[in-house]
Image (cartoon, rainbow, N blue to C red):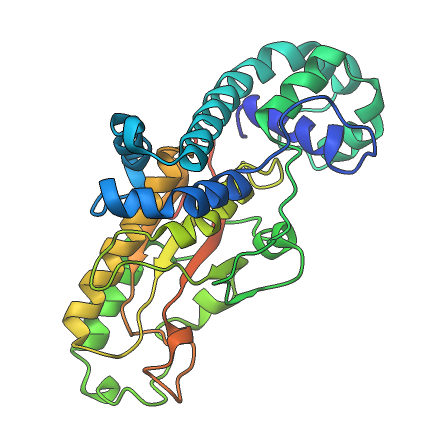
Length: 333
């Protein structure tokens, strides 16, 4: 059974996602905030932080060190993003304390993990305390997950991002970063898979799991995420914080087209998947236990008839099942 903290996360969905009332709090999502930072600071990042990766909070640190030389728009965006990250961290830490009485009062007979828990919270959403509502709003659990102007988006499994990432109640069998990495290496040494045109999928199961697929722009021959794709990475973070998805494990799967050597493509795709995972962990605060990264290079092309097509360069965020009672992924090897 998942820990009590997931019951508190579940409250968030019922409080504010579907209601018309709004709490006076920041409702901007990471996607919008990081999108603004990428737009307003793109030139400044190129000037001062041209080789600095997004992950580890290093872009914001670099910009902070060079504040005196930043454009006014960039300086303000940096202040806004820094404040948003700090407020979200503080609010998420306060939700268990401020919402526990509401959980016990309204749904005390239902334990975390019970399928009726969410229905109970939906019915109770107008009766929670003002302090709990404010904490939930500040924590960002009410943020809209509409894709918005993610210019490099390839496709969604459905028009509803949450629906596209839901639906995995058990661990996804043998799917894990380690098992996929092994399959990719075997694929490169399989003579039957030497022809890049119409190469069979590496894993049929992978494409059938709940997932979100986007194209992330990186610097040429590099794992550095371009500012134009900050919003897309922020959208992933917003999705992973949705209360319906808090109890799940995810894979970040990187893919390339078939230009260049297969060995190089596999290495570059792994570095890029790792860069996205690192960014989701810091600055966005996604728990490291919830997310793994693997690069498959050109071994699972989206457009199999056109191996060098641009749409083959993409990143999948794939739901691989629930966290177990120890807050670990059952698929981890």
